[in-house]
Amino acid sequence: MKAIGRNLIIKKEKEGITPTKGGLLLAEKQREDIRYIKASVVSPGEEAINAGMKEGDLIYYDRHAGHIIEINGDPYQVIKMQDIVVVL
Image: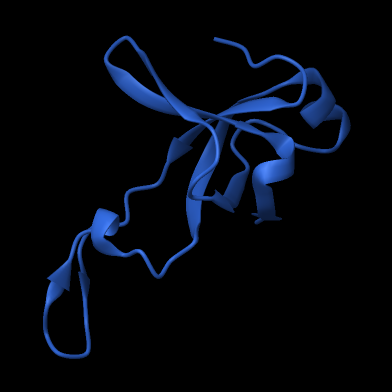
């Protein structure tokens, strides 16, 4: 699997359950206050490679960006390079 151009194929990091101050346990999908999500780059496109992105980079991207694809039963997300806000 290979991304094309300015696209990146990423895999979301599992956040798990987060306890609130009041003791409630929230799943990742219930955390609407968090705008950016952590992920690892599976495949950067050619333009993303030229901009310094590489496979295995950890990034934060806008939670509303891109779309999900399923390959061999595993979910991946395809986003554009412009949706990345932080590279760790």
